Length: 232
Ligand SMILES: [Zn+2]
Ligand SMILES: [Zn+2]
Image (cartoon, rainbow, N blue to C red; front, side, top):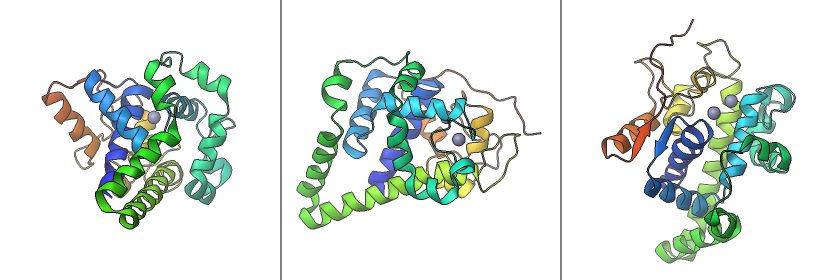
C-alpha cells in the first residue's frame, strides 16, 4: 500500500497537477525523482498520460473521451480502465497534438520509454528486499491497488458522489483520502488549473499538503491558485 501511495503521489502531483495542467512547477530534482518512481512502479510514459488526460478534459463524457463511464458504463471503466488507457494511447496523432509543450527528451527516448524494463527493475528491487515470494506478492498487490484506484477516479469520479459545481464529475471525500486528493474530481473539472483540489474547509486534499511541504522546502512553485470560486 505504501508503494501504491508513492506512485499515486507521483501521478497526482507530477503527471496530473504539474505536467497536465501546469498548476505548479517542480524543481528538476523532484521531477527526476517522480519520473524514476513512475518508471519503476507504473511504467507510464508521461507524454501518453498527459495527452490522454488532456483529451479527457477536452471531451469530457462525450464522444472522444478516452475513459467515460457515461458512455461506456461504470463497471467497464472501473474494471478495464487500463484497457481503455492502452486503446487511447494508440491515438498517436491526438496525443502528439495535445502534448506539443512536452517534447520527448533524451531520458524519455532512452530510459523512461522502456516501460517493461522499469517494471522489471522495480520488481527485482522488491525481490531483493523481500525475497521472491513476498516481492512478487507485493508487486501483484500494488498492481491491483493502483489499477483499482485509477479506475475508481475515472469511474466513480464521473458517476457517484456530490456535484457542488455544475459539471459531470463528482466529489467523493473518501476516495480523495485514498488517492491524495484526486477524489475531489468535481472541483477539479471546475478549476483544472488549481494545484489545490479542495474548495472548502470541510474538504481534505492530502496532495495539497504534500505540495505545501515541497513549497516550504523550496522544491515547488505554485503557479495558479484559485481561492475565489465557490460552488453555486
Ligand atoms: Zn474527469
Ligand atoms: Zn485533470
